[in-house]
Structures are given as C-alpha cells and as structure tokens.
Amino acid sequence: MAMQKKQQNFRQHLVRSGLKATRQRELIARAFFATNTHISAEALYRRVSGRDRRIGLVTVYRTLKLLKEAGLAHERQFGEGRALFEHASSERHHDHMICTHCGKIVEFENCEIEALQEEVARKLGFTIQYHKLELYGRCKECRADASGGTGRIRVVGAR
Amino acid sequence: MAMQKKQQNFRQHLVRSGLKATRQRELIARAFFATNTHISAEALYRRVSGRDRRIGLVTVYRTLKLLKEAGLAHERQFGEGRALFEHASSERHHDHMICTHCGKIVEFENCEIEALQEEVARKLGFTIQYHKLELYGRCKECRADASGGTGRIRVVGAR
DNA sequence: ATTGAAAGTGAAAGTGATTGTCAGTATCAT
DNA sequence: ATGATACTGACAATCACTTTCACTTTCAAT
Image (cartoon, rainbow over all chains, first blue to last red; front, side, top):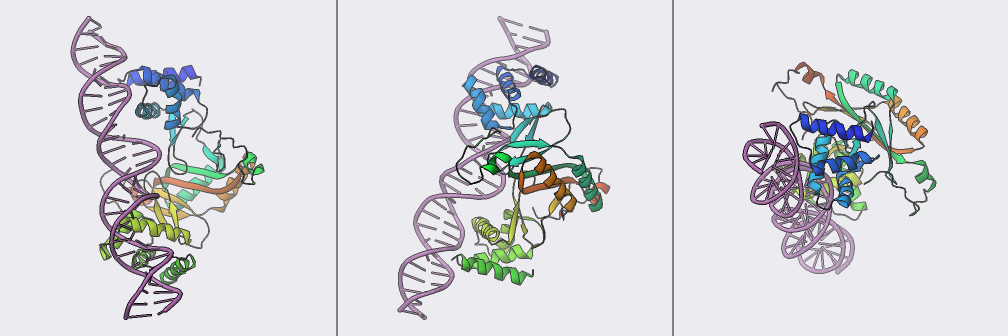
C-alpha cells in the first residue's frame, strides 16, 4: 500500500470514528508511514520533533494507538522494555528474527511451524487465538564481526 | 530434583559466590521451591509475607535474582506486565501455551518446531542463540465455558 | 562466646515506558 | 463566524522493578 493511500485510510478511520484530523496526527502518521522498520514511540517522536518542536511525546503515543485501531500499525513487544511499532501490511501473519548484536529485525513466515503449533495446541486441548514466535541470534554481519569488538554496528531497526 | 536438594544447591551457590545464607533467603527459596507453577515476585512475596511479615518485596526480587544466577529459576515475560518465575528443571528447553481466559500455563516441547526454526534462521543467515515461542488461546475448560460469562475461573498459575 | 569486616536488609526514593488528568486550544458541521 | 466536541501539551500518576542508604546480620577468626 502506498504511503498516500495509508494516509488516506487513516483520515477515513478518524472521520468514521468521529475524530478529527489534526495537524499533529497528520504529521505523526506521515512520519510513521515514511519509516520502513520497526520503530519505537520515542524514536518516532524524535523524528516528528525535528519537523515540529511543539509536538509532544504523549501525542505520538496517542496517535500510534489510533493507528493501531485503524488497523494500520501493529505493536510488538520484543525482549524487555519499549514497544516497537510496524506497519500493518495486509500480508499474512509473520514472525521475527532479531539480531542480539545490532538489533536488526527480519520478518519471516513459515506455514509448517504454524501447522505444528496447531497440532501441539490440539493435543493440549487448546484453541490457539494468537501466538508469538521470536528467534534471537546473530546475523551474518555480526557473526563475521564476532570478535565482540566495537566493530561497525549496523543498527537497522530504529530504537 | 527434590526440594531439599534444591535448597542445598542454592546454599552452595551462595557460599561459592561469597554470599551469605540468611534467614530471608532460606525462607524465600523454600517458598519458591514449594510452588509448582509459574509465580510472580509479588505473589511469592505474599506467600513468604504470611510466614514472616518483616520480609520485604525487595528482598524477594533480590533472592529471585540469586536463584536465577544459581540456575535454579527461570524468568519468563509473558504478555505484558510482570515477570513470572519457574523452577529451572534440568529438563530440556520447553515452550508455553497460555490460556487467555483463566491464565493456565502449560509447558510443551516440540523438536520438529525447533528444527524448523533452525532451518529458517539458516536461510536468513542467522545463528540462533535462543528463542521464544508462546501460544495463546483457550483451554478445554474455558472453551466449554465460552459463553463469556463469569463462570468458574480456574486460575492455575499464581499471578 | 565475641568481634568486626563484609554482606544483607527494609524503607523509601528513583526508573523508564506508558497512561491519565486537566485547563487551554483547534477542528468542523452548521 | 461559531460553538459543541474533540484535541493538545505539560505534568502527575502508574506499574514493575531497581537503587540508595542507614542500620543489621552473618560468619570466619579469634
């Protein structure tokens, strides 16, 4: 989905919900759609703050919540601490592989694993509603660089 | 591993680390080993508090950290919020299935899934260090009860 | 049994991410 | 233009821990 389209979807969601399309919301949504990584509220705040110093972190949190409600953003809790937000693509469900060294996040999907999960749940007498699968390890670059030194650290995800 | 054995292991860990075996630590460890579910620091605190009102929540947190260091406890972060602690059995790695209705937690292991995870990681150029797999859904009892009513709620995990 | 250095303790304050409150401000159908 | 309604930012509050600090306990060496 193009950025313009997403922006429009967001505006539609606001109108349908009897909410208002404000300068701040437009700006925050635009900044969010302009990212292509997993981004934290704080990091997004720093970006919009660059364009308009008067926008508060609180409004960023509120707008991200609206984006979630609009089905345009997903919130993810990796490891400890802060949440990261990603675009909610209309694509299928996916899981994540996270580099413990540089923070890079790669998405993947695997039907076989999903099928096995269903099987496990059935055996346990459960009906799965949703799941969380995260693989943590070192990516190729960080493995090459594995001396543990301070070598070039490519942080791909905004943190 | 019997509770006595665990208690002894803990004491050994303390001595080896130049730490002291105090009344509080003994009591908290004993209470922890006496549980057989996933328990929060807060819940464990309430239990020891029943035996000795003067033990602080802070000491429970500190002792749980020591138990982790001793390799006798694992900390788990399910969903949002508080951490739950479980006995670190010498058994193999396991994952968790959690009932979103009553909070029941069931452990399971599945080699096939693990193998597929390794395969995915290899394809992405990653080396897995650890992973997190959590299935959320309704257990048999809560499904039967699925009218959504306030029916009998069997909370198995201490929260 | 006593002692004293090192470690431990509880209370209270601090954290860090996020959420709630509130008085003033912006939006938009009319 | 206007006014009802929603929105905003600053600040306080919350939640699950963690740190700090003045006092207390432990335990190896007497």
